[in-house]
Amino acid sequence: MRLPRRFDDALMIPPDALGAVDAPLLSSLRAWCESGAFPVVTEPLRAASIAPHNGLDGVACELDGSHELARLGRWQGLQWRLQILWRECVMQRGAQPHDPWDCGWWRGGPLESAGAFRPRRPTLLMVRESDPAVVAALLATLRANSPAYTEPVRVLVVSAVSVDGIERL
Image (cartoon, rainbow, N blue to C red; front, side, top):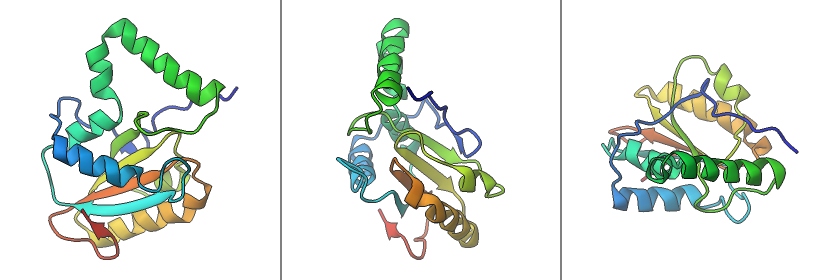
């Protein structure tokens, strides 16, 4: 049995749990995140940029299961979380579509946490960074380690302008 790992708070800050869900944004981001991720990981790392949008925190909370957990209440939520841990740690099966993702905003700062990062489950890392050189350095650090990723990682750069070298959603 593999021991459970925790959310990587050295790399990410959780999204705002109060964010409302924008259904069309959720649908398009889920499709982008899941492409190359299931049934087997064919793209361990994907990056794209997107214009700032008030619904990003809500979408992230829907993807990471925060909204589901709040809907379930205390005891059903605990049971749901234990089922997830059972599948991840005991059954050691890979993630499936609609399993919760780890979602969060990049903390910024030194790139050591990005270099040490290994996803415990599918991960959406959102980046609020206006300096293209910093974004490029972060992506280069993640790409250098991505062949070792056993779960898909998606990097979403939130920027009013396109970022060179990555697709625009």
